Length: 370
Image 1 (cartoon, rainbow, N blue to C red):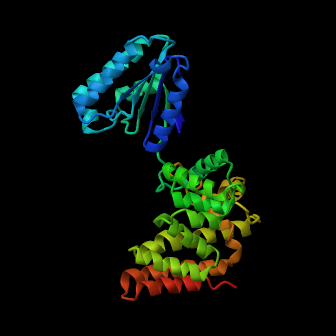
Image 2: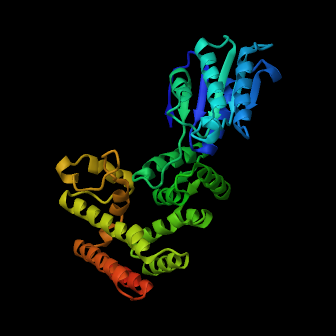
Image 3: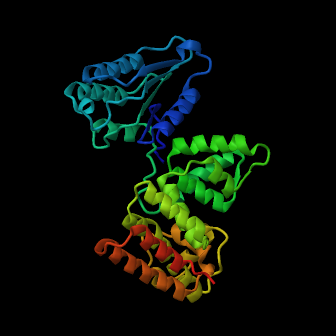
């Protein structure tokens, strides 16, 4: 979430791709900004979701008229709600809408009456447009975008979101339960809130949340199955690993996809974590973040080979998870596992062997735990 702290003009904006969070935040902000003593005249809501360009332009001009109309008692808030004319869409690009937004920008630039406040909320925003640039300069702006679960390192940000919301509810997640919950909900704030409410009702006065309770209550999505397969491999749980492989194949996942998305990354992270722990005498962590802290204290030469995020920082969270289980494997065993992944990859793309059998062999070979 990004926030611009300037508020000289009493103009506020809540925008971003996370629809449920934008709507929730805007509603809470509107309740705060509405003058308490103005009664029914303290809040004027203009529905900003027009069916076409002309209707949307009309809604923007209605907001301008409301801003220019002085309140009867004790001030007022004008809320242009759920505006769908700020994005890079046919409506947003239309001449009539752009003209109306330019008029709104001029109105804000000239300044509002001392007892008038303006709030705009939208889930589709073209940040290249002049109106958005004007908002970023003149308004207290909150940008709330969805977490991108395809981007490396998203788990850390999602973990903090879940932890903060769970704390507000008084829920205490075990570390394994928290990691599992993050992966199952995939950073979707609406699902996070729905599943936390479900868990809140289930645990009652106990308030502690276990991994078994998360598995029982939170639906197992594709991402969750892949995460659980990695967990089963790291835990040397052969029966569960084979069951999850079979389940993914039954859901239509390809064997090569299962290998490259779930099995290979798990083996690679276990091997990297094992090597780091042995070479630098790092203790087995009880939670991923303690291992991340240990990595951050190592010299750059010791971590230059590790996977990186797009911004160049270490993608350390998966390594932290792996470090919690690396003690179950020997380095030679993990090296053999990487070689088995390579052999399986070649077989999957060049032979006619049964794909489930190939994956079964690699899982059995990896989990020959002593």
